[in-house]
Image (spheres, rainbow, N blue to C red):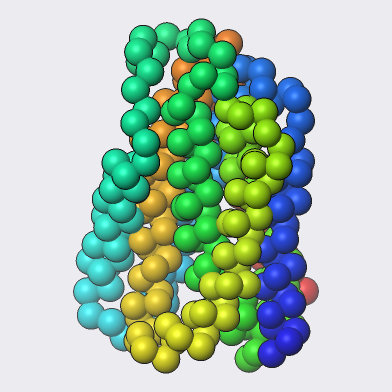
Length: 266
């Protein structure tokens, strides 16, 4: 069990590494920030559609759950609504005159940027918790598979940490604050593993645990469409920056999935 906890902690620590990589002064420039926000959106959308949702569907199907497609769609919709609820509970974000034109206010005067970073941290933490449980269980049942899974998760946790820290650092200029939020999301990995194993697994059927994956996918997609893509468009200094960021984020997921497949087959 110690090795299982260590594997999840290692995977979670990669989120902190990503946060460190994002603490570069260049990320406080509008064009770079635009591409970075779009990168986060592309990463989360493709991760949700290509990996998380198919995994939830396959797990429900193999468990013999009736109407597994509708259950998945329901959890996806619930995730979208949850983001809207969290968004409504965060402090007001009114900034006038920034609907479609490039933003001209200083970065540290835009409350929407800080909100985006906090929402990303919440959603990534929610994603890391069931992911940590999955790694933990794999390490207990098949250590060789668990190690490969932990490495693969660590690979895509690096850009996730960057996605959290970049907007918070750009909004505040406070490296410590940005890194703390990346750390919170990273700690959710081993914490989710331990809590999930000793608490949730004992009181919830496996099917409901699987549905948390679809819930998180809905949160990721809603956050990307509602917050990140519009923010990337506002901070652009060239129209190509948001598009290139989206493509790079999606491409990063494809590469991490290819590495996961290679590790699993070796």
